[in-house]
Image (cartoon, rainbow, N blue to C red; front, side, top):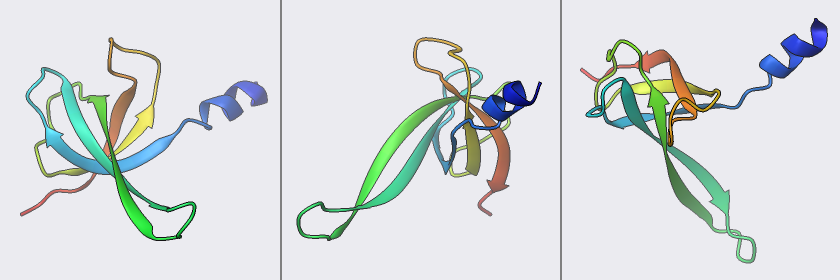
Length: 89
C-alpha cells in the first residue's frame, strides 16, 4: 500500500496562467521557467503550454492555477487543474 501511495504522490506539479478557455472542459495553461544558458550563464525565460482538464469550465483567461500530471485524457490532455491560486480583479 505504501508503494502505491508513494507513486501517486510523485506526480509533477506546475503553476501557470490560463491563456485560453475556449475548448470545452479544457484550459490551456502557460508555464514559464527560468533557465541559465549553458555557456554564458545568462538567465532566459522559457515558456511551455499545457492542455489541462477543467471539468466544470470554471477557470477563465488570466487565472493563475496549479496543474498536476495525470493519465492521458485525450490526444493532448495529460494534465488537470487542481486549484485556483489567484484570479485577477
